Length: 78
Image 1 (cartoon, rainbow, N blue to C red):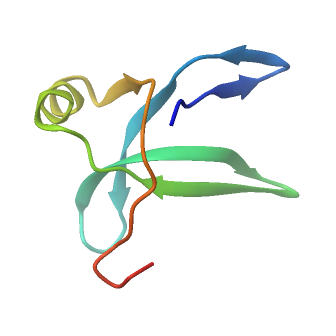
Image 2 (image 1 turned 30 degrees about the horizontal axis):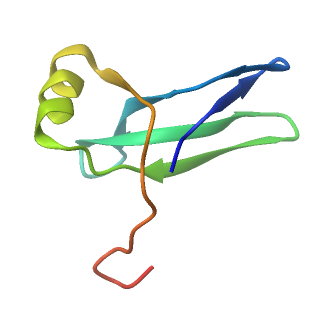
């Protein structure tokens, strides 16, 4: 599926996969962050499994742009 980002009324044909450090575990995972934290707002987190070439870029730059993806299931069938 094609992915898009909508920000301040502008639409772009990609999104950014960022590093999210899990509290307590101290492990960084690739994730798409949706929304923002603050009064009356919430941030959603969508973990991402990157292909090897993008995984290397993500590790080096702490983020990577993606234009396509697919929805999968976790080991817990979520």
